[in-house]
Image (cartoon, rainbow, N blue to C red):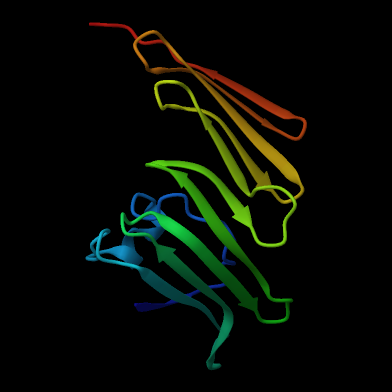
Length: 171
């Protein structure tokens, strides 16, 4: 299935891989009306146009995203390419590794370490996520309270560290 989209303005496309495109806001419109269990492949072509006053519209950038799904609607592979006028083309190819319904990692073709890697606790909740952001690794660690609710989230990215704590109170 091919979906084409054109937008005006000069916003650049971010090269970021979807984790679950069926649930992510950026993918809601392109996947609207499709059934998760029936779709095996989607190719989305987005074009950003620039128009100077009185001049014709010209393509500023084009992003092509090709998503391949397994029989359960989980992403198996993503190929993305961005061509921006006056800049070098960028692209990547990713392979998704699942264990049941849990995403374990996303491997990038030609990279020495995973694009994304996840660890889960005994209850199946996300415990640690590592994501490559350029040359830096973003690490998120999550702790849960006795009721299974998120109690703490620590994010480390380079020298940046943020700690979020949550407390729950009954009425």
